[in-house]
Image (cartoon, rainbow, N blue to C red; front, side):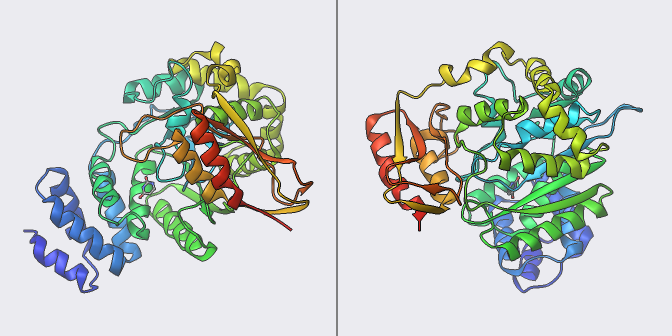
Length: 411
Ligand code: URA
């Protein structure tokens, strides 16, 4: 019989918890038999003491077993997915899922909302009128049968223990704990019953993990758990010091994704999408690149959006539909080479503009953000635009342009 105070004390004192006790704990938590204060105390003990690989695998398996998994009929295509730990302007999922679908894979992508300063795939897609992100398991399968890709939210029955534990971590200072992050992310990905998974682990000013070494340890832990649970898992580490692509903000990022799907995407976004897709695909990178150039990926995206209730006709007019009333340039204050464009500050400013949530449940303003973002390494002249800010009010516009002055470094 599980004695919670003893379990909490053991972790507090740095002991390794036996896997069967971890499984019992999560089963009891899912049945509502563990008080929130006890689970929070345990999360804090894990935050300070960490977990071994065996403990992390047991926690991930237990969270996975707290709910249902997606089940696939016999003979369906190879199931693949990608997970990013989150960055600024990271819209890769919107391009990668249809790209893999049009080359014969199934992509059952369960995505999340914005977290902290990083944007969320579901929030971005919801800027498309009618697009549904609350599909039930049967609808997920039907969408895959029609479109080969689906991007939707966590259903009530997928990893309920993670949903509850995440809510506690969010308000108890225990989000940035490697074993807890690994178990949270990997349990949800394993519930998709995948054949292959690629992880994009970000590091830098706009990422969860500030330094490369921390990102490397997180990547190794996630790959280890994925492989233990029978999914071919790989990871790439990518810098997140400047935004990915040239747009940040919900509708602005969908507009940029549409451009990439039509073969007109910014080079960094396209290259990263192809690298990640090639890591799980059955076909060569060149075939994938061809699908972006010849319109097949775009057609697959339209099929997915339509199957999820979205207005396909609105996709090419989203910029007008979500046009922010106040737009201004951030200008270079001197001539030289742009050596820094701080992704973290850009992400925080986007949240301030209303493009992210400051509290759970806040409404998102799809119109706001930044576009025409110049990449570092570019030579600029004093007065050149470094990016354009889109705001809902003149006050917010002025504040954002003022704050963003500190984001740019020119030498
Ligand atoms: N995303 C998740 O789903 N869980 C975490 O713990 C961190 C990021």
